[in-house]
Length: 339
Image 1: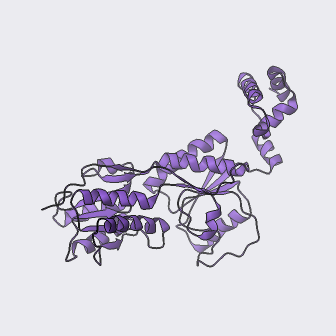
Image 2: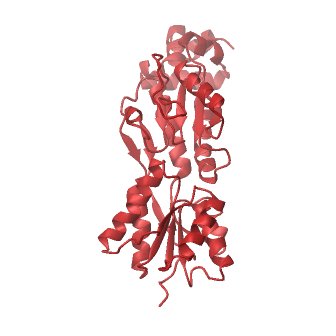
Image 3: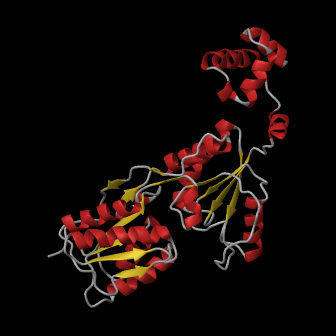
């Protein structure tokens, strides 16, 4: 089926059909509907590869993750894939759990424009070497959208989609305080992460608002892993002022905390309440089911991908963060403070 047939059926010129396929924003809405209807009726399949070549496009998006297999980011990826498929993009996934050579290869890819854009879901900056030193480069970069907080000042120029981690962590801590807990421990993620910083900030903000002190040793790094959280929990349980509740900066660490509390012969939530963050897919089937702060992961994925598509088309000049709502999900891992 030819473009000429589509034009005849839509009652427009072949130039208008071509303009619709290459720059739809330049075509009036009524005309767009007529052309798309004709395309649907004829089954016309435009040569996307050739069209992208003419436009200097690759139809490839690079998604940078901290690691492959993170349960929360798996949900974010579902939203990204959905919009990418809808918009005709392929996805190349790169993770930052790699050696320095692979990291340099990724950085070079950003600055050499081998892709149309970057979705950054890891706490790294393409403007820095693995050592943290600024990366010297005069190459242009493709559009970048963040699915998390900016980790460097340079990244503030790019749009982002995220929850308000300070407010979310404050809400979770406030809920524990409402249950009567005064000794509340916090298992943080990696110390060099802005996400960790913001969630700890929210925890401390709620404690301060309630005029509750945070004892030395109540904030422990859990490395954002199950095993790291188990080690952190052992430290909290050995504290002379053992917390009656533990707020974990993600659900995987909450699972590790629950395991370690049980190993110590204690019960959740009768002896110690536990709250997580993210509401990953197995949070509700933990034993006990986990109280957590839910993020709309798939929505974050969809919105980041849509904003990247807009940036690629040159229609998203807004670098402001787009804040999506969080929600406290109360389950069985939290209860009133023990008397």
